[in-house]
Length: 477
Ligand code: DUC
Ligand code: ZN
Ligand code: ZN
Image 1 (cartoon, rainbow, N blue to C red):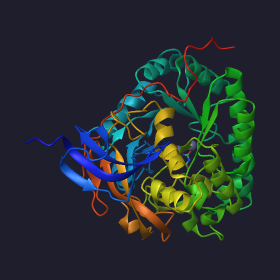
Image 2 (cartoon, rainbow, N blue to C red):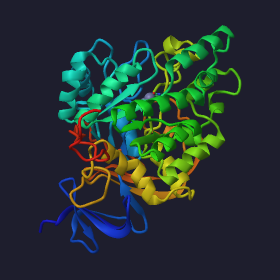
Image 3 (tube, helix red, strand yellow):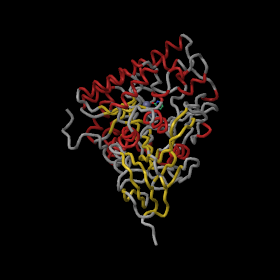
Image 4 (cartoon, rainbow, N blue to C red):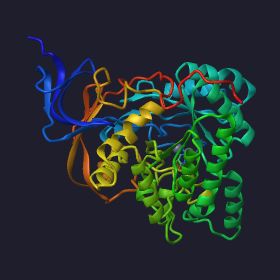
């Protein structure tokens, strides 16, 4: 006799963003078909008695195989990046198709599809990065791509090769408003950073730790305030990415108090690292934790925890930006120890994102299990037009699930699955790790081994972000 389901997970403590309940989960054709007690049999069964089952994570900010200026190259492509993601409980990734100045957006997207094709173990979608908002991009390319399901894009207020000026930001925000896209903003003041960098360089202060001196909280605060003001002028929601500490948080709280739709994202590095991880002396080892904005201090870590607990933050992402420490393509471009402003920005974290937050957030008593699910799966799926297919445990949703193992575990890079030669969290003691990850109803991680499904990860055409105000909306003021 044929089994009723391909797989049944029995006796799960199912956690969603709003509930926690005991249930079996019946899965057929990669989709959740039934929830309830004593479901009919499955061709395969997993007993999850006493264990928490959450939706697979949606990592809505990670960088995989993003083209870099030679000799720098990202260590993870769609194979190793999604392998590591799966072993850390993430089942959907949204990296970036980045436009290079002078390139059409369409060319950037086509190139990025080729990079993912046949390689991804997980379902994936792409945000756009708009670095060259020409009249054609604004009038034709960007609206067309949004209509095709690229319903979010990132813009930068810093980095010479990516940054937009205020007028350009207004132009792209107007497109976001007109076409219902989510605009993600990297908020740091480019001119302040350049000025501080010149001064530090002239004083011979070029070690990795001076990266944090060149990007104090003030430059993030100013740019966050300006981003909010520009969005208010256009009357469009924005999402401020990788918020690092108190000063940017205060700007976002103020915006919310004014009734403005300002969403915010933060990342593990702002909870678990400080500027001291960039070095307390001039050692080059600190290059491993160079990322932007830089990690701050213990007090600021607490501000970020508070924002996670009280609803200030909408999304918790990794901002995985994978560069090797040794070799010629990563933190030492061409094999050289370079001044801080030439160190590739970014740290790995796609596999550790969920275990860190579950362990220190949920089991550490800082956030509820519901909030964990909301921040890591449900809200990112909503913000980027993937909900309810992704980000929840419900009938009709994809069977992307994590069964958690609670127990002591030490983070060791040798046990991670990315292609980076270090983790910033080496030696950290955690209290939980994904025991099983299911993607589309298939076990991709069993707590010991990764089970490849290369090329089976599907490209996801996305809908309208469901966190945005309901359409239709009036014309731009
Ligand atoms: N900062 C970014 O803006 N992107 C990638 C990594 C980083 O540190
Ligand atoms: Zn950024
Ligand atoms: Zn990033």
